[in-house]
Image 1 (tube, rainbow, N blue to C red):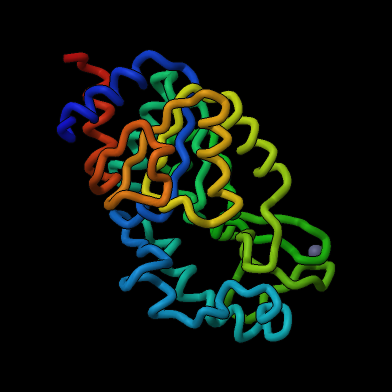
Image 2: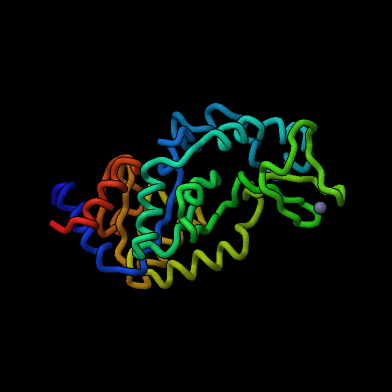
Length: 247
Ligand SMILES: [Zn+2]
């Protein structure tokens, strides 16, 4: 099948479902100026890899926060792109019921997606490590590091660091959505990092068709029923157009 034919076929399947779930990763936000964490242009190449290590953060919160400041700046400056907008539109059309994202940038919500499961938390929220209170990012001043809660607890971005568990409710919501979906869009993620990597497997076992949109073929391999290669911000709008206009 040519790429165009694959895209049309994927659009036909989306048009006929009311239970599609999108699983998104770094590739969706590249066009918003947030580079992927992995790969030669990845953030790990540029930044201290200890930035997301919970043990390091606990040990030296001033240094931990200092590393996080640049990331914070990048996240706060990013705006949704056409890929985020297209997924929000599919939700408004009654096709996509949930977006499960591994991204921490909050851009799906900003684009208008309402049912978003943040598998790895959000840099747009802050959380007290002691009492669990949360705030919007804007409510916390970073002028003096590290920020502390009224209870004297350390405040960290509400992001899942290495060494921390996936938030329980996010896990329950994600597994539930994957079990109930008829179609899963896997977008901009190589789907290699557990436990997010289990989600397409769960969807497939529940009978869902898998539509993959990635720059290059991923480890999903034969799990994907349709693979469309390209930039998410370019392919997703094309897919929405094709859903609207059956050939
Ligand atoms: Zn507290």
